[in-house]
Length: 164
Image (tube, rainbow, N blue to C red):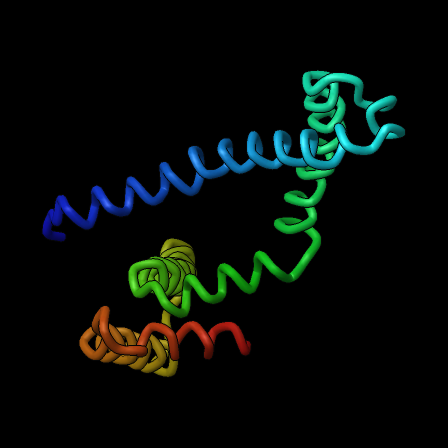
């Protein structure tokens, strides 16, 4: 994980610009343009919004809750966010690796706990179960040896897990 200051700075700049500056600037710009080019020119709208400040307060009072609801729907009620996460996992090998590792650790820990519980009860593990454990160890070792951050071994594993 080498530190590339220029690209890291570029990333931070883009995040600051798009998340904060551009958002605030766009909101101010939209409110200003709509008021002075639309509201001020239509007498009936000027009755509803007599001053720019009142326009900002009214539109913000309506717009913020509406936009919060749209954001909620985006994350909780629509398939849009799931699609975004799917794309991130497909294209980001680090994200993919974390999910695959978690999946493998859970699976391995559950099996180990099962055997520990049985052994603590003085139950024997039969030959078939030992073969399964050896086979699982072999499969995991092969997977770990084959995968890199630049190939799709982890992605194929994830797709296989998701189909189950």
